[in-house]
Image: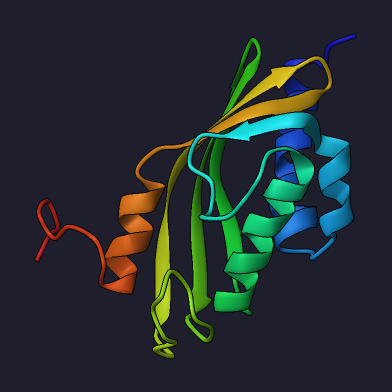
Length: 145
């Protein structure tokens, strides 16, 4: 049985509200498929719910006060698209970058694909560039002055 588009959106919102912002990492097993594939995983993350939990844990270690705001969400057949903004203070080492104590804001659209009742795939579009730019590791072209 598949989920309705409204159920899929609610399912995806759980990732941000309950798992990432609410620190209920065990809920990852309820929303992600066992073979979940993240097309832009945090370095070292595996597949499945454990890989998602690893990525969130790494971000929460680097940004303990991290909060994600969902700016917009839409659903189309087996896909849910979310535009979100991540905010936090860089207090832990991440990607080899020592903590700066700086408040950072980054984000962009994320696409989730469902198979049945769980999320099978995830694509983050531009999130890596936005995040790396905030850390001082990203490309500088295209940045407004």
